Image (cartoon, rainbow, N blue to C red; front, side, top):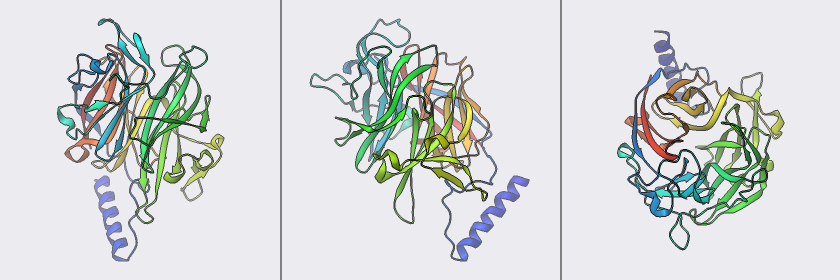
Length: 373
């Protein structure tokens, strides 16, 4: 009853504000003070396999027999699926990464706008002989640069940007060391990439793996990109940074969430060391989107030992609700990298779709679930 009264009062207040000539605040940035509404998730389903020889896409024709990750970038009516370490040949019964014709990263693309029956890839970014090419070359030397792993990307200023981490060494499960995190840029729809070496975060920082989201100011028409970020590995918490779209290539223009002032407004600092945590948990491969059904932020990530969890956020900096199990580790052994894309929802956002990597058979799958509020 209290929730209904609170929502009714909020609606009345917004209506009065509009009548008095006030402007309605962006709910993505001004939702603090409201109640959490996400009660749980139902109807979890593995819809389809996206990569591998056994998938409907038959990506082995691009020499992609095994790969993982699958974060997504939207550009116009095309969506790019970005994969990590990719192998062209390997035994059918091999578990985990490995094999021959190793590329550190590859990209597929599609205009498929119906997620309900799986994702049909239109093609991949290929080399001269038609195999999926490595976009960001790496040394492939252990304790130097083992690989370059793309963590997420976005479109801005007419270009594509891809955030990646340079991995020094893979350690124990869920642990690895990074040299640094940085950005690459493509001006030709993902075919070729330039490393932006002037934009780097230290390997021991909390800004090694990111999930970006662009928010346009309806008054000015300008956009800012928010990045939820975690350290290397899967055992750190989430911090937050942002930058104006026009300044994504200028490290000095990034601002870090440093807590709230005495009026409850977010503080943005140019000093990375002042960054405050927004989620305190063991977070691996996170993904954050705005959900129109809940009118809340959604965050998904791997929580080692439990599986994939989902949280509801009232603003980019929180507060964030309790973690709710989305996919149990016991139901999908070897699961990781649950990446969402707000282009792929159903029922007004009640149904969410997401990629999920499985260590066996080391490929990317398409899942869906329904939100309950």
